[in-house]
Length: 230
Image (cartoon, rainbow, N blue to C red):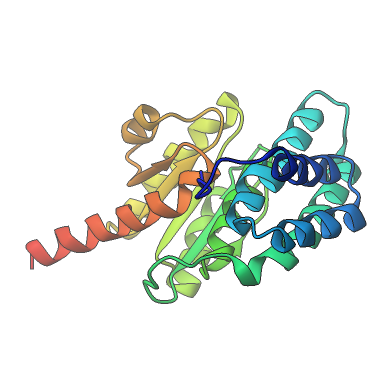
């Protein structure tokens, strides 16, 4: 999570709250106005993303999970999110350019929850990654097919429910049998680092905020291991 150089003032917190509220209430115009106000006030655009927009989408996810919101409402929340992100994105800081890295991402077969996955996707996109989103309820073999098709740097798989989580283990087994060097990172509410290790994953992201850093660490570790053993 980002930290601002100075403590957040009451006025700045209001702007962040306005961003969150506008996403939850799917008000695109309000989202754009709040995003522009954030820039006009000299605030960190990354704070706008991580402390304003992302909490809004997380709240939308809770409303969806509790049957207050349904798919149309969540889609409208996403539209509002992107309306603000379009304004903030040109001002977001980039990490040291590791080259045009590519990721295949999707939610495992049987699981229709994709808000967390979408947030991870956004974090990769704002850092300039080439993201191939397979969506939700993705068949096991589709992950590997897409990975082979585009020669991605790794596969990211999400699962919200424990009932679908075991599918991750099957995807990992399939991928490693076909390509031992295929890297796979897991995430989602039902997954822990211990579970990711048990399933044989190469990486684990506890949240969307951690995903990019964890992916870079995973790739760097793999590359170092390969060099050491060649």
